[in-house]
Length: 103
Image (cartoon, rainbow, N blue to C red; front, side, top):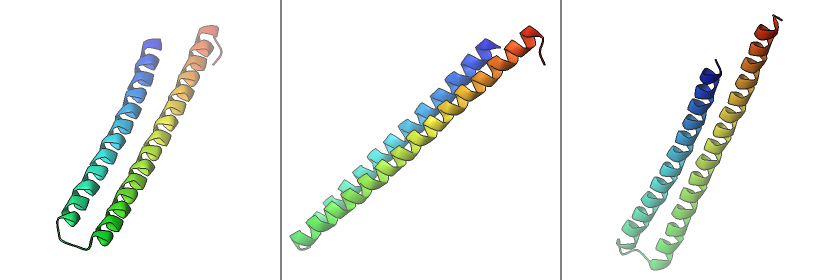
């Protein structure tokens, strides 16, 4: 039963890490897309000031979105860890109760 708890906690932690990694990857994608869009705008013969302003705006929006998604993923991972700890505690209490004969 202890092995099941350990495996369960490990699985939850792995899932949390996977969520964080996906958020980081998505953040990188957003920034790359913003850079590509900025390059496209620069090559379109638009007035330079407008292009720079738009580029900064796009990059800032992408960073804000990436930061938000990373923060949300970190919160979700923390919730998963708390839940795993709580479940492990409940299972240990149940095991102690069974061993001591209290039901």
